[in-house]
Amino acid sequence: MATAPTVPNFAQFNFEIGDTAQVVVKQNGVNNALLQFGNSLTAMTDSINTDLQTMEGQKTDTQAAAQAASEDAEQVALDKQAVASDRAHVDQQKGVVDTKTLEVSNNAQQVALDRQAVAEDRLASEQAAGASSNAATASIQAKDDAQALYGDLNAVETAKTQAQQAATNAGEERVLAETARTGAETAKTASEQAASTSQQAATDAVTAHVDDLDPHTQYEKKVALKAGAYRETVGGDGPVMVKGFAGLGAEQAPRTTNKNPDDTSVTGFYHGRSGLHADADLGDNPFPAATGGYYLMVIADTSARVSQTASLDAGGKSGVKVRQFVSSAWTPWRELYHTGNVLGTVSQSGGVPTGALIERGNNANGSYVRYADGTQECWARTLPQALGEAMRWDFPVAFSSPPTTIFTSAPSGADFPRFTVSGAPTPSAVAYRTYMETGANTATECNGHAIGSWI
Image 1 (spheres, one colour):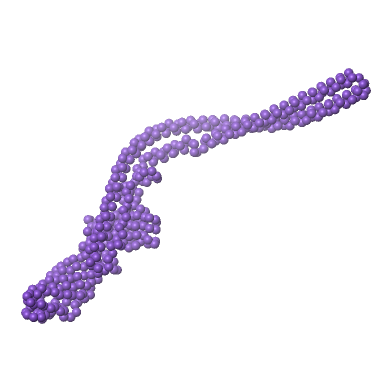
Image 2 (cartoon, rainbow, N blue to C red):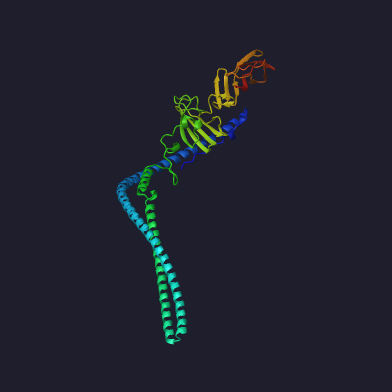
């Protein structure tokens, strides 16, 4: 995946005003940094082209997936019919659940009746136990009465046997009562279990019909997956990014946000319109005096730290400017120098260079050079001279204030001419006289040099 190069730190190539010895050295450093930055941009472009080729292959795979999705759509139609059938079956099952619910209600009523019967049986058992105890007491009393009244052993034994039989009968009745109670409790447990099973069946039937398992919901999910299969994607795993977002992979980069570079802070590639274009961008336009468009590269660390690089596209003219968003405000646009704008017309605005780094020229009065820091030099060879007479040199281009002047000459033989300036120079000219120490005026040439400022 393409990675945007780091914009060089051009502050390291700054030089002091008037330090002409470092101009070329520092400028070479700037040129090398620009060359490396250009190579990085080329590498990024090659990487993007490779990604685009990969995307073409993915597009073929996507088309195959689309064909498969079309076949899936036919299957979906069949699934919808099955869903309708399943819905009818669900409705039928709901009817069965309602029937089971009614049965559970009837069973609950029967459990209530059984509970009442158990209570009655328990009372009867307690009454039978009481009767058995009374019978045993009566048996003992009968034995005592028999012994007391008759004294006859047979009569006593007969009474004893009758008492034992009565006790046995009472015990059997008690066992029957316990059996009846156990049966009633067993019936109660079975009825409660049946009610719980029926309630669980009703709950399962309702749960089986919730939206998460509804075949209609599954159909909607399948449609969403089909739509995703048609989307062209870049990158690997993770969230899908639409082709062309922030200019990545697009045939044409998007317009700057709100047609304003000040509002464009999302990492990506954009295009805008220069200041003299009919549809010019708003805000701080990087090229206010150009008529064409420009390309904008944005790299954001956070919403509070953003870097922008603008490249001019106007009829073959080139220009690159950079700026940063720091402390809630944009810094001024700064132009990067390259082989296309190092030489040209120099200019300044508020002490900031706005033109070329070096300007050279010449005319009948000599040659000159101007530097972006405001320094200006003029020189001329073979100036007119006449021994002891006042002469005038008009500078090939005027200074902003009187410059410093120097005159030299090439002597002939033993003659050593000496030059002095008569009067202070003006911003546009200087007067001079030629004086010889010995001999006649035989100097072969006279040279003038002036250095000052053009701002």
